[in-house]
Length: 88
Image 1: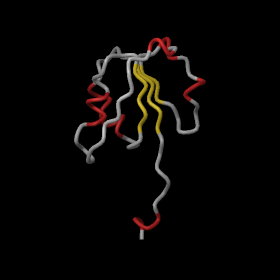
Image 2: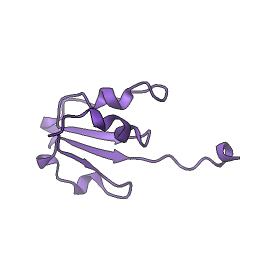
Image 3: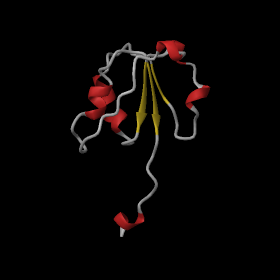
Image 4: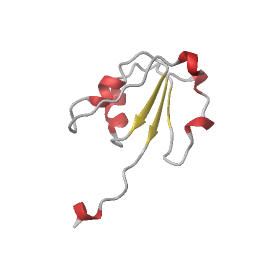
């Protein structure tokens, strides 16, 4: 994909379990999904058609090293730093 192929950037914000990832995955494909709420993609991916070509990157993989030309969706997780105050 180059800059001419990008239709837009969308940020969806809401409480846990409100369907943010499910809605995002319904958008037209080729789609790059940034999983800020880590696990949202996994919870929503079962709704995708079986023939959807998906690659879920590891947190340490670079998006720029991935060829999207053969894929419909790339999901890149961005885990939040551990919040010790919530564990105590």
